[in-house]
Length: 153
Image (tube, rainbow, N blue to C red; front, side):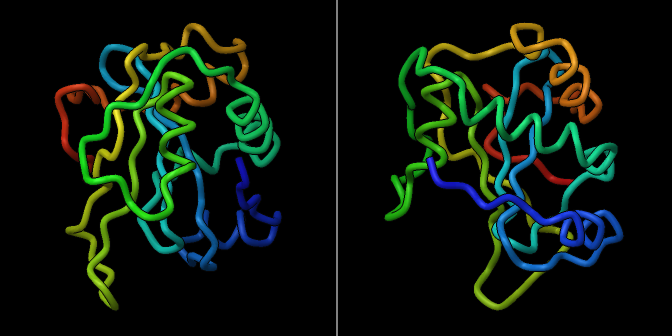
């Protein structure tokens, strides 16, 4: 999988609410402890908890990139022309979301839409402890990814 890693300067700008443009991949857990993977499309809103640690952010990206395939991806939407990221995430057990912008318009009312559901969902507890703790810092207490079509921030 090809992914864009933010530079430290990009990370700090995004933490301060200035989104520099490249996709930001971030992770969260739902009320059941399942892991969701989110792609910001460059200007999607990102929870402040994602910016708790530059080191853990990068360690999490590396760990997720190394996850083995444990199942398949069930698509919730029509498979987009560039679908590899969400398919790899779902095949590794992650619920795969993407920011849903309207062309040329950024709005706080927009949301992350669910693209693909894993056939074998991964729990945060199945991850290395430090990464699981970091990801669990961004928790949607009243949401279950499996029954959701999107996440609003």
